[in-house]
Structure formats: structure tokens, C-alpha cells
Length: 135
Image (cartoon, rainbow, N blue to C red):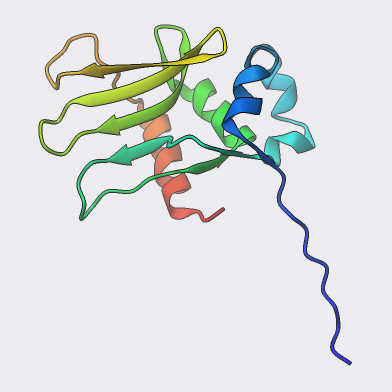
């Protein structure tokens, strides 16, 4: 008789739950980064993508701990935590989305806009490692 292996289902947080509890998560992010809930996977967000169909990639799942680490490293625009960053292939415009009062707001910046979001090197390194990891 073959051995039965137990499979553990990875706990996930969907977009609606995440947004409804965002204020608590944001205010307690340092504490939550050290808890088991840091391994919960957030679904419903595309954290980083490029518009090029040949070299593009998307991070459509991320753990709460990794998102908190991104925020700590500068994945923030004017004090608002980002949940989306995209460079459009055709016109090099930048698209971001951030959370404010439990709602998602998005902006599009032209490539030469002085107010556009530019990711820091630590943020780029984290995004690169997340792109290679499979959740």
C-alpha cells in the first residue's frame, strides 16, 4: 500500500479581505512580518509587470511578508504603499496603484514626468527575486 502524503494547502488572502483589513496590516506591519501570517499569499494583485510580450513578467502572487519587505525598502509613493507597478512597452509610461483608506487608486505617468515613481535598487532586487520564485 503506498504511503499517503499530507498536503498542506497554502493559506491565501484575497484582494477584498486584504483591503478591508489593510489599516490593521499597515499599522502593525513590523509585528506581522515576524508572525506565521507573513507566509499567507495575497491574490488578486499584479505587483510588477512589464508590457513587453516577449520579456514581460508578472508577479500575481506574493506573500504578506514579502510585500511588507517591499514597503520597508521603498515600494511607496508619496507615503502611500504601492501594490502595482508597471512599465508600458509602447510608450514607456509608468502605471502605479496604491492603497488609500482601504481603496485602490491608480496613476499613469509619462516617461519624462518628474513626479513618477522610480523604484529603488533594493526594491528592484526584491522584485527580481520574486519574479524567479514560484509560489
